[in-house]
Image (cartoon, rainbow, N blue to C red; front, side, top):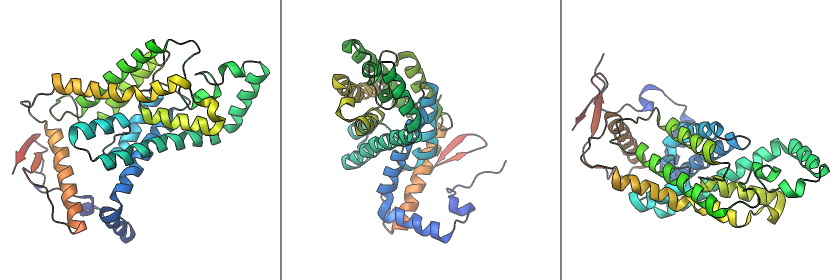
Length: 317
């Protein structure tokens, strides 16, 4: 096998894009990079929500995996306000950028729900009429089994909100811990190929196992869906106390799960894996290239890495 080149190979080195696309890329780097990142967060949550509005479990997991595959390389793949907030607190993620990300995430869920409503409006209207004819519409409309429950999260009447809170908190805590385990660059069991599917599998397991009690897990999906239900059915779709619980509990719970992993399992003495170094080297080369296009001297410094694909060993320079 040939030894790979020591410098990074960019897409432009192997594939010439149309001049219009090249001009657009340069414009993005110089003036619209923040907008494209927000579009990626918007589209990621839209894909994730759109895939699973009528489904549960595996559909949510597959939707999240697809969101990562399509959009994460552009924005970093937060797709979750709790992840964005955790990055602000622990990884110096810019606060104003976080606000844009969270707004984009919620908007993605909102638009996805409205799209599904427009696509299935006829069937939803038929189901509503059938429930009304049976005399059960008022009792089920704003429950998990009702038409509004397609888009917004609700719990069954009489549900113990303390139990629902505990269920939500534990699931979110586990999800936060898994997120931090997956992004740990020293974790030898993770590489970029399986990352989307680990996230998707975890989400599927949590929803399959614990959604009967009531679980939201992601504030962007919950708040966006809630806004969609309010847009369609008005204030009656608000969800009451549970709406507050569903939208807010996952924020601290996910963060606490991440911090638990950080405190108990992160070890600075462990060796960064070759796959993580390859990703870091690619990110560094991308940022250097963007700086060159912007005409701004790069502020990047430190060790540069290349990975020998034949031996899977890393060389530093």
